[in-house]
Image 1 (cartoon, rainbow, N blue to C red):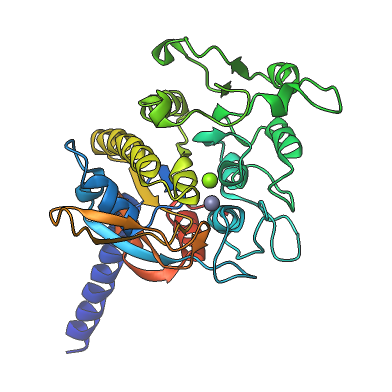
Image 2 (image 1 turned 180 degrees about the vertical axis):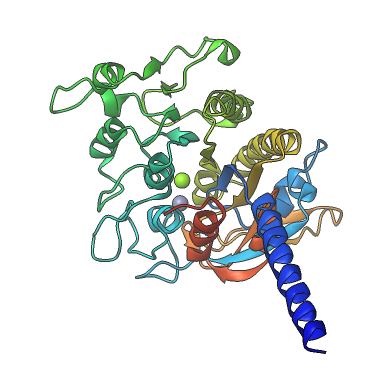
Length: 362
Ligand code: MG
Ligand code: ZN
C-alpha cells in the first residue's frame, strides 16, 4: 500500500513537471518577436465605417478576429490630445495633453523603443506627418511640449530609433543653433535620404532617416497615395535584418487633420491610404508567423457621426460635432501571436502593458 502511494505520488509529480514544461513552451509560442503597431490618429468607428463604405478593395479591418476597445482619456482631460495619447502607448502612463514621453510631473520614463534597444532589437516610425510630430515623437523623445519639434529632432541622435520616414526636414537642417543634424546623424552611421524620386525598393540600410518634405507631408488627395504602404514595406524589410526582432510604429497622421477640418473626403482618402498600410502589415505577419499587428487610434477627431441622407437614403451625411477631438472609446484590432490579449475594454495604458509583457520588455 505504501509503495502504491509512493508510486502515485511520483506519477503525479512527473505529470505536473511535464505539463508545466509543456505549458511554458506553449506560452512562448504565443509571444511575438516583432510588433507592427499602426495608429490611425483621430480614427474612431464612424471614420472606419464611413470611409470604408466607399472602398472597393480589401477592407483590412475586416481581416481581424480579435477586437477590443481603448478608453482614451489623458491625465488632465477626458478628451486627450495626440501627445498624451501616444505617450501612454510608449511609456504606459497617462499624462497631460501636449506631453511627449513624460509623465504628469514632466518626468521622463523609459519608452518601448528604449526597452527594445536594451535587448538589441530594432525600432522604427513611418508617418504621414513630420517625423518629429507628436505621435511619432512619443516613441523616441521626452519633452514637455509637442511644439518643441527642433528639440524632438535632436532625440534621434540618441540612436533609439533606427528608421524614421516622414516629413520634417527643416527641423534637422534649418535650426537656430545652426547645427546640421543630418551630418551628425551620418556620423552615427545613419543613411540620410530626402530624394522623393528615389525608388524605395532600392534602399538598404539598417539605420536610416528619410524626410520626404520640408515640413508636413502632402495629402493623399494631392498625390501622396501609396507612400504609407511603400514606406512601411521599406521599414519592415530593413528592420527585419535584426535577428532580435523589431517594433515598428506606422501612423496615418492625417486622418486626424481631415477630422479637424471637418472635411470628410480628406479624412476618407487618408483612412483608405492607412488601410493599405494595414493590409501589407497583415500580409507580412501571415507569412512571418512571429509578428503581432495591432491597429488602434489615440482618440477620435471631429465627433463624427453618420446620419441619414434624405436625398439619397443608400448613403449617409457626415455630421461633425467639433473641430477638436472627442472622448469616445476607440477600437483596437489585433492579429498574430499574443493578439488574444487585446480582447475586451481597457484603459489606453493597457496597450503599453500588453506590448511590454508580450515582448518580454523590462
Ligand atoms: Mg498624430
Ligand atoms: Zn488632432
